Length: 453
Image (tube, rainbow, N blue to C red; front, top):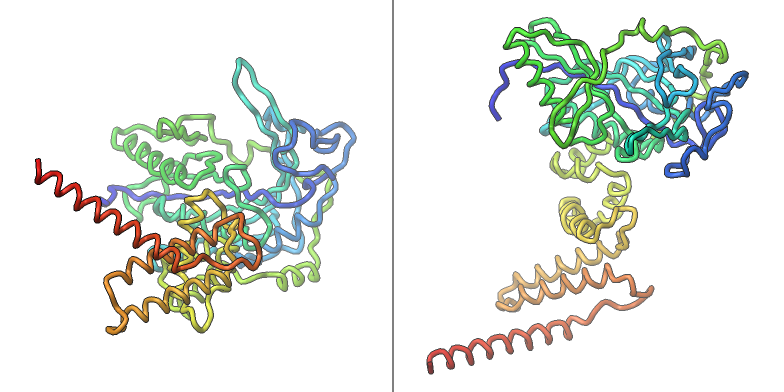
């Protein structure tokens, strides 16, 4: 890739939708895919006289994420009203946090090209989501089910200097919230959304340029494309002596370009002030210590352990720690007879490839770790016997291939019952030899006919 003529500066705002059973300030459920406007009440619809009540589970999840990212947990924080008009924001304001957030000054370790980098986190604060507008058919419809669903907004420092760095950060953040169990991180369903602030400058020594904001991008691939396009667009404007305007832009994935949505607001445009219906949030030491004790092994800690203790490459460690269920499965496959590298190859290539071919997720994997471990040992034993001069024959490789494929078919067979024996190797080998013999006889017959003609 050719070197850029300019320096790109990126800051990210990640919105994490929390996996709570009820909304942030009322008892409405948060089930995804429910009927339109079926999960609303006077509180989240902003009816006069209704008072919000904070969901304690939201605070616990926020503290958990703050501790995982090394943030300072403010023992007192304040909820504020962020005033702006959206058709899908029924109250006319959003309950958020402004100058006194719950978590501040953290960092997120990210593995990029085999090296560890740490990206700063400015703040993590609690806020509520807005509804969903649907346009088309000559009009617009609004579903208020999402109104009041709890969010954590994670605001990074402007530490990213490429789209690849920003994407790696987002992938690590998704792995983190999944491992903590506070969100499913499903970008297609909007559980993880990203706003990006982008600016360019001639050299790293120059001051920051005028930034634009890219809103609500819900795909890692689209985020990288949007950042590269927007940076190139701004640099092209500067080269033609045009002025970059501070604004909010949207990314059109089909056309591969960004377009203006509205002028970018400053903090004073939102007219923040403390919400008079909510008391200051006081976080007790017991809650913080309870959350600290509930912290699992974090994704980057597990990645480092795989690299340092198990001797895996950075690539293998990243693949295996991308999903919590995959990591747990891999560790159950490894034992004294199955080295970590061998298990990693089977899990990351054979198993994941077979699941992808059958359009299955890891959660639907029908092969138990113990059965995969037995298969790996069996194949290793066949290979060791094949290396002996007394037992080697040209047919060994084909026999191993037949047995390996038969094991796959048996492992993924949905009709098998518990305790059923694996397929007979003798039967499979006989069928293969008979088929091979018939094929050779057919070729000889065709050769005789052709020469006779």
